[in-house]
Image (cartoon, rainbow over all chains, first blue to last red; front, side, top):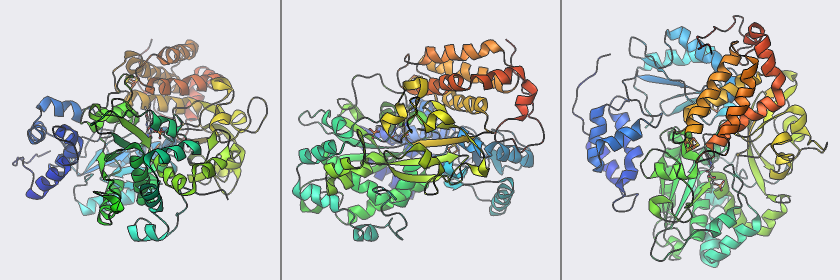
Length: 174
Length: 454
Ligand SMILES: Cc1cc2nc3c(=O)[nH]c(=O)nc-3n(C[C@H](O)[C@H](O)[C@H](O)COP(=O)(O)O)c2cc1C
Ligand code: SF4
Ligand code: FES
C-alpha cells in the first residue's frame, strides 16, 4: 500500500482541542491525556500510529517516546500498521457467536478474500476480529469507525460493504 | 410491571436533552442534595438504601464510600466505570446513550457526597458515539449551572470530564482503570493500598459503575428506606439485566430484584422464552466471568426452591450448584449450543485480554485456550479434561487481580456440569465438529486446524 509522507503536525483546530483536553487534569499530570491524544492522532494520520506519529504525541505531552509505544501497543483500538479505509471490526465473542457471528465473519473472509489482520489489495478493507463490543443482545455486531452495525446477516453485510465501497471515505473513531 | 428507576424515562422523546430531562423532574436530586442535605446525609441515605455496586462484585455502595480517606488538602476523585467490556453485558451503554443526564445527575449527587470537585467518566473507547452524547449533555449541564463553579448557588464546585479508553477489557478492573486514566497500560495494581486511600494520582478515589451512580439520584429524591423496600433481603432495589443469546427478546430489562429466573426467561415481559421453541440448555447469569449453570440449576436451587434474581439466590449452593449475579449479563443457550465451543471462546477472550502481569493468568489462560481448542476441533484426549480442571484450579486465587478467577470459573463450571459433552467431543471428534454452535446452519464441516500434537 502506498503511504503518503506528510508533515506530522496537528491542525490548529486539533491543537486547540489538545489544549482543552490537557485542562482536564491537574498540573503535572498531562500524561493522562495520552489515550485521548492517541485517538486524535490516529484519526488525523490515516487511522494508524506510525513511530513518527507516536513521537509527535510524546513531544506534545513532554514524555518519552517509549511511554507512548508501550501504551499504544497495549490497547487494541490502536493500529500500529497501515490499515484499509474501512477497518471491519467484527465481534467474535461468545454471545455474538451464539447468534451467528462466525458465519458473518466467514462470509466476509470469503467475499473479500482476506483473513483476519489482512487488507484487501485495493486498500479498502481491513478485517479485524475483536472481542465483545458491549452490544451482545443485538449481535452479530460489527464496528466500523465510530458506528455500530447490529443484527448482521451475510446479506446485510454485503449491502454494507457495497455502501462503504461507494462512499470511499476513511472511517475513524473520532 | 415492576418499579422502574433507571428506565423510568425510557421512551420519552428528547430525554437526552437537558430541557426534556429537567421537565421530567430531572436534576431534582441535585437540588435536594446540594440545597438541603450535608454530604454525610447523602451518604447516609445511600447506606440505608442497601444499594450494592452494579459493576460485578456487588459490594455495598454506602459502605464503600465511607472508606474514602479524607486527608486535609488532598483532592478526592469519583471515577465512573463505564468501561463495560464483560461479554454478555451491554446495559451501561444503553443507559448513557439514551439518558445521559441521568448519569450526570448521579455523578453530581455522588461527587457531592464524597467531597470530590473533579470527577471522570471513563468510557470504553469503542463507544465514541456515546462519548459524544455524554460530552454534549455535560456541556448543557455546565451551561445551566449544574456543573462548574458554585452549582445552583450552593457554593459546591464540580468539574466533570469524559475519558476514553483504548480497547482493553482489563481497564474495567478498578485499579487498571486508574492506571489507564493516568495514561499508562492498564495493569492492575496490587492491593492494598485500595483506591479509597490511594487512587488516581495517589489521591483517595471511589470507582463506581454507571448503573450504581445513576441509581443514587432516585435514592436521594425518594429516600434510602423507600429504595430498600424494593427487592428482597440484602438485594435491594432494581437491576438492569442485559439478556442475550438464544432468546426471543434480547435486550435490556430493569427488574425488581427477587424476580424468579423462570419468569425472567419465559415471560413475554422479559426474554419471551427460548428462540425457535427450543429447550433451554444452560445460562451464564452474570456476564462471561461467572459460572455457567445447566437449565435445571438456573431455574431451581439444589433444594428445589425457585431460583430468584437476587445476589443471594443466584449464589445459593456456592459454585458447586450456584453462580453469581455479576454484572447482570444474562446469556441463555439453547439445546443446540455447544458448551465446549462456548467455553473455548470465553477462554480465548480471557487469554487475549490478560494484561500479562502474573504468570498463572498469562500462561494459564493460553494453555486453557489451546487445550479447549483441540478438544473442540476433534484432537482432544480424555486426560485433557482433567488437565483443564487442574490448570483452572491453579489460576484461581493466585493472581493480582480477579481476571484470573474470571477466566477459571467458566472452565471449572462447564466441566463440572457438562463433563459428558467434553467427553463426547473426545470420543466423537467428527460428529462434534459438525455440531459447532453458531455454525449449525452450515452444511460443510469445519476445517480442521493445524494443532500441535502432544
Ligand atoms: C477484569 C475485570 C473487569 C471489570 N470490568 C468492569 C466494567 O467494565 N465495569 C464495571 O463497572 N466494573 C467492572 N469491574 C469491577 C470493578 O473492578 C469495580 O468493582 C466496579 O467498577 C466497582 O463499582 P461498583 O461498586 O459500582 O460495582 C471489573 C472487574 C474485573 C476484575
Ligand atoms: S490476573 Fe491477569 S489480568 Fe489480572 S493482573 Fe494478573 S495477568 Fe493481569
Ligand atoms: S459478544 Fe459481541 S458484542 Fe458482546
